Length: 79
Image 1 (cartoon, one colour):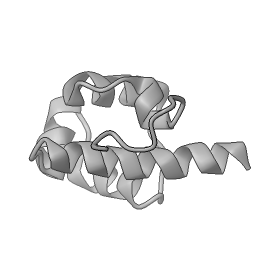
Image 2 (cartoon, helix red, strand yellow):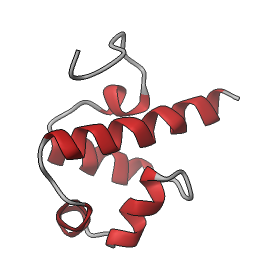
Image 3 (spheres, helix red, strand yellow):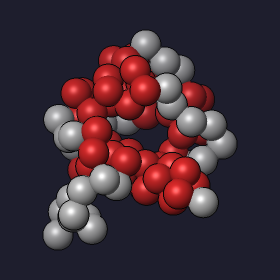
């Protein structure tokens, strides 16, 4: 159950963070060496990123891995 909660938070925060920065799925995919379909699948919960992918996403979007995974105290990055 906890794993599902974490991945649900991840997909929400990935999409929120990417859109807040004005970054397309294509640009994010190219920056971390993945496909646009891969990013789409992550944002829709169809597949899960590796730990290395989560780190690369966090670095590119300038957020923490804890934020992406919901392991922080904030409910929303933009509150």
